[in-house]
Length: 149
Picture (tube, rainbow, N blue to C red):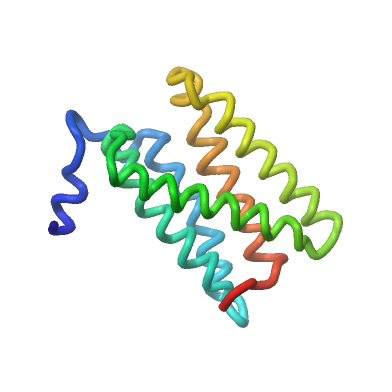
């Protein structure tokens, strides 16, 4: 399978890049950047969030077409959430702990509330599952230590 065919998957029309489900992925980039320039870098965050960002862009571009690819995207997205929760347990102080808990709460609440409601999902998914996790990753990249490598 060539890379071009990956971006052409799924039935129907593609989302435009100006759609909030697409452009809000930019919120994930500062955390990746900060984690990559740390000394030492937080490579597990760079790798995991980088994978999620690319897979999520492809999934959203194809209007959230549920197939085998979607299962892979969901696996990595849930893994990134679990990573954030794990880092929350090791918060280096009260302020990062409160920021982490707030981000985890907003992200999980938006996920649960919008799961079976497409109208709410269209309105809140980009904020609760792109922008807020992007802020959460900035907290982790800025204030936490790496776990693995």
